[in-house]
Length: 391
Image (cartoon, rainbow, N blue to C red; front, side):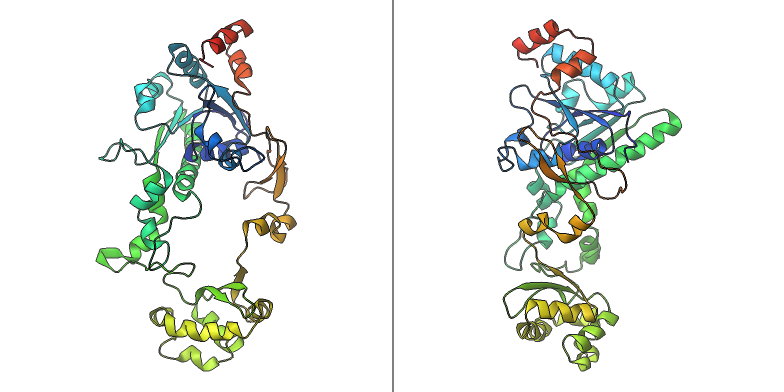
């Protein structure tokens, strides 16, 4: 399913948030021209060398794109970028606050020249506001958004193990661009989208925010356990393996007591009758549950939980995820070419049927000559720009 074939996105992007958004558009068939700095490129290319010498971050967020190196601080480079944008459907950028506008690439100026253009700005905090000019990275925004206040253990806060603020902003940018394309199909006019990492992350903090509504006590940091639903978290079996277990409602609680704990009378105990009761007495209840798990192997515990049934899961390592039987059964792992050879890649969630678009993760500047040739530049023109470091 590639409904965005024929849509061109010019992406002045770096790090994760904007590249992740544009990759989603590319996965659905859009032509994404990724504009990078000459010689160094997107700095995410140098985050690590874990994928056969390539950056894990870059490989993840940049398949299906064309890489154009261009110094838009040079007037010649800026003019070429303007020409690319003039033919584009979407201009997406996440430069430092104000950098695009200072270069004459602000939404107001671009849309005045091209009313049909969709301009999507991604930043840490959005404009206007007292934080508009602050630089923002994922961990900083997790902190500002309050995510760290509810993540970790009672003794220590912890960041999410993935760049959740970048991903949240990228996904809202992606869905907003899709909506803007639909709207343009009706009206013929583009729009300006201003996506902030802070707002995207705070939206995902909806339940803790309301839980602490009007000065209420916030959810406690509960490690790998759910902060307010119990029992919902990890329990160690007698063989040392961990089983993640989730009881979500009173019907499941009654079945858990009878079928797993072998103590049906606990279901109506005044300390455990409702989730609020169980949550308030989780230490004493946790000791009872832990004692039961300790008498079983992980396999035996899972068998009993499945028989109730009570939801449970393995606590997989990343190595085990690559070999996950469910991903294999659904044919979700494919291959994507990279400058270091083919590597596995997960198909976009959702579409079924046709094979997903799995075109290459580009080398730095790999498509510069092709893209500029499409603008009418000769090989001699491009050679001259390259000699001056413009491309």
